[in-house]
Amino acid sequence: MMKIDLHCHSTCSDGTFSPEEVIARAKIAGIELLALTDHDTLQGIESAKSAAKDAGITLIHGVEISCQHTLGGGYGKNKAANKIIHVVALDFTDTIMMQQTLEGLQSSRATRGYQMTQKLSELLDLEFAPLWDEICAKAGGNPTAVGRAHIGQVLFDRDLVKTVQQSFDKYLADNKPAYVAIEALSLERAINLIHDCGGKAVLAHPTRYQLSATRIRKLIAEFAELGGDACEIPSSSEPVSTRKMVDRCILEHKLAVSTGSDFHGANMPWRRLGDVPKLNAEQIGVWQHFQSI
Image 1 (spheres, rainbow, N blue to C red):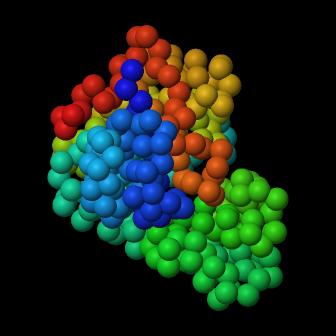
Image 2 (cartoon, one colour):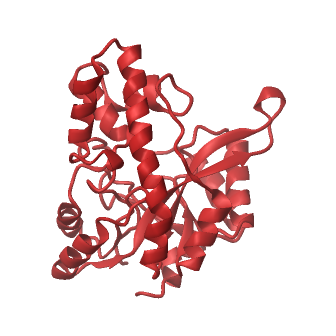
């Protein structure tokens, strides 16, 4: 079977390898079909496309879009949950419309990174300017590319946390002390944008939003109701029970599935390019509906 990875990142967002380096590593991993899905930008696609052609890899257009969504359900103060949900756009053809819409989100990312750094400097009694300079350096000197992974890596480099993951657990994850919400499209608008650009809308990593099992199922249901095309299946490192729950929900709502490593590079070494879960016999890969392959 073809080896496929439809979710990975480069230095154009919060990855640690350039688009060309991602392609080189994909070649080593034996990947035949790849999507570079940087956060809210298409900046790396052209250079990746050239490298992919030389490497004999089929590269499709991809981007991971930050979306604002309010989940209902729950009780009392937990009746509604406002979450940033990620949607991966795949195989779209209108790159101009997509990039123009996402440019506003990119400027928001720079503001957010700056504000999170300010919070951390106060929380940890650190001098702001050198901290911000280090974080921007991790993002290749591009403030608009700053993501939480860059910030977490700097905290780790400074021995302020034992692991990058701990930086999220203590400071950077949703509702933690240094968290700042990002400006985002609504889930519905993002799905419509992807379709208007000729692509497929995929719900990214549904089990990574710190939601209960009930709300994970509700998120998948609402994504399908809004016209989403596919859902990523959980990584092999997650419990079998979690995978079975997501599989049942995908089947119930007649979604296709997608697989991706969510590779970021050295700042998240446990996510390896090409290390993706296998489909069940009855599942349909979203790539079976791509127009460009």
